[in-house]
Length: 418
Image (cartoon, rainbow, N blue to C red; front, side):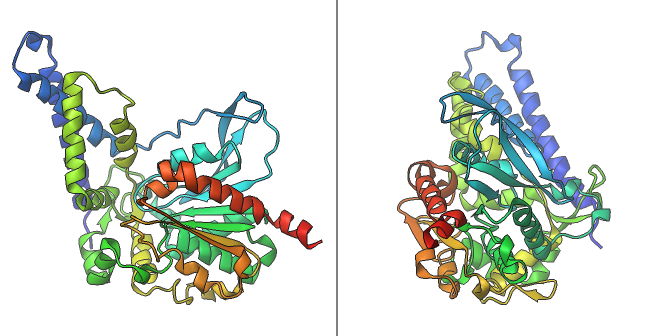
């Protein structure tokens, strides 16, 4: 029986560090030190400011901060977020652009549930809005979901995607980023078998572990080296008393964040140090590059224990998607059943999370899909983040994705066939 005290201890450590930062900032920013020539006074105040901001962001869900979009008429149009489907573990959001003509391209952007909120894709959303009628999956923080709402594992996740795609209709273009790529493929296969008329027009898979064994990384090596018992023993915690999900078993976001930072510890330490110096010099700003990145990067959410463990076991260890043996409620999600959904894969040449080869493996698995309905792109010099939110996405990948969806829209295919 896992106690709640360990989860509360992590939250206490976060709050304590936030308090240390705010205290240092308050003390060493006091007017009494105004005439001091000792640089350590200003540096300590700056350290406190950066530390307080960093640890406070870990407990906040960021805002989308997308208020307007420029239409083809050159005018700014207000953007409103509407919850189309509300479910216990995740919602389907619609970014409704007010006052512009209807856009034919309807896109479902499937956000990853791997420790960060869907707002991690804010720049991706902003770049797609001018050309798309855009919907996004908004997964909930497991610590805020009461135990009475039940479980949520990879099969439930897949069925959520099935419901979202079904609701949006067969002219939908699905774009899955990172973690959901294999489950988006499984959801499409599920529809191909059970409701072929509800399948999306296209499926774009960006940097996802379709076949983790195709190209080893630190992530896949970790999954292979630990047993499920070790994971359950050492990384699963029970939500503490402070939250609505008290008692729920979760993989804490703070623990995931620690793993992320440890993978590039020197880079993050250098960024933190440089920001302290910039604050002390007065050259930092509230929305500078550092804060824009880390306000999002440090905002983490918990995953249900069953989702995390089933992902490691079934997607990474057993490679059920790659072997085409994945089942949902006992029903085989047969990838060979996909005949009428154009599929594109995107990979980054320098991706150290989903290395080149893992995502493109999907195309070899789609034996029932004609070659002219398959496409692949390997972006030179791009890392994991860059292929969906960086310069590579903006300049190269986004235009390719938009062209692919336009070319393979089901309505266009029907008109060509006629």
